[in-house]
Image (cartoon, rainbow, N blue to C red):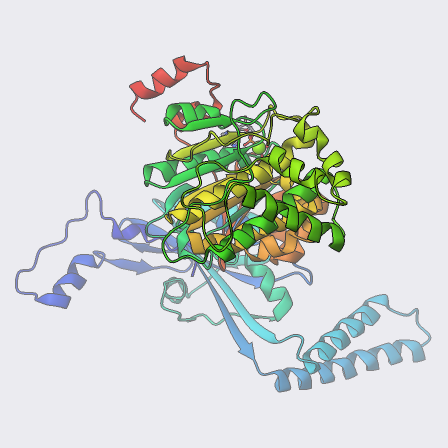
Length: 599
Ligand SMILES: Nc1ncnc2c1ncn2[C@@H]1O[C@H](COP(=O)(O)OP(=O)(O)O)[C@@H](O)[C@H]1O
Ligand SMILES: [Mg+2]
């Protein structure tokens, strides 16, 4: 039952219901709810002040385009619509089909014998029936009797006739023939109430795959109790409220072409999450989250070669009680090895790995940091410079040390060879990566990400981590692997990761794309090219209608999939939110205005 709307329950105007004191309990409620009267005419009815009419579908074309029903559902009219699917016994259908085949065959033979021109129509019919029979035999298809009724409501007869025409036309545009129910308006009305009663029983036989085209969207409601307002459900205009922590995991993946509103969506989510006392961390390759930072008093940390802010990858996480220091140290060393591979730009051989492992241990030992002993007392940690010195003094280490040169004294120095001077102690922290040369951007993302992971493990609370344009880090296989790891472990640390990606095709084809999808319980698909829409259709089992919706989607529109529910969503901002998002840091005037209207 879709879009149930019972306008006659809201009594306005003339009708006055006499209040009967003597009635008790349920009887009294019934009297209060019931309309003053109902009249069922030949092809319409009247209940109180409201006029109504039930229509039914008589016949469908042999080919139905997916999601055709959404054309009717999105009409901005109050109506009740009900669909009944009665399964039909396959055995009985098969018998009928056999008979039909025999009949068509006889007709074909007869035409041949009479020497007439062969009839292509008969041959097509034969082929179709035969195909259907085979699919039924192989249980690939089932037969269904399908009925569709729709009851319209209006304030007067004229309006009712107009609305009837509109709906009949809409059906006609999909080659579906429908008409008003004659003599059975009462049965029609009952059949469209949420009672699951098919009182008219005017059905049409369809096979299951054709019948599946009736569903415009699989589910039409995401309203989580403690969630964040995401926007408007495009089917019924209702609100969409999402609580990411309610699902199998809290991760969100946003996939769409550039300019379709991905960053806008995540900015809105950030502002609304801050209101719910969540901490938010952002990796921002375009420095476009700065204005939000300014408004909400967050820390904006621009990473660049000028190195006002430094992240030292050699920092060890601070320890909490009863932790196995050895394991943490080992994990840290393996992350450092990934970093070194990124810096060098290739995978290391097993000899090189062993050599680097040893050199790293020695570097820490020189600072009196030993895996088994812990590092509570350590005041400073080694840097890349210290490591490079140890490497140079190791047999065979010179070659690797040379390749680290750009980061030690060459053109990229000053970026990751200094002590950390950044804190995460703010409810909103944005790492801006725009000032980094492009070749260093994925590295910057990786650094920030490992820094964040080290910190959040120490104090577990609900946090949101936005990785905008995640393909910067995905471009590097090492980075993609690390990102997947963050996502997989995130839930344990109550970290909700949002991955935003515009290179949808690359993403889907990457070795890490699919596992990231599987590990993201929430997906938001926005505007797509035809080619990517086809790919997404397969991955997310989109209907033809949903696919077309994505290809034509306007800015801010998309399909939100959360667990096994999905809705077409329009991401809606308030005026004040919109101003904050669109304002550059220096455009404070608009902000003042926003404050005036009280955001
Ligand atoms: N839901 C929306 N409502 C209003 N404006 C929007 C909406 N979504 C995006 N925009 C505007 O459209 C432009 C592109 O959006 P953006 O989020 O930067 O796209 P993307 O990150 O997908 O490339 C921006 O100017 C943004 O302010
Ligand atoms: Mg963007």
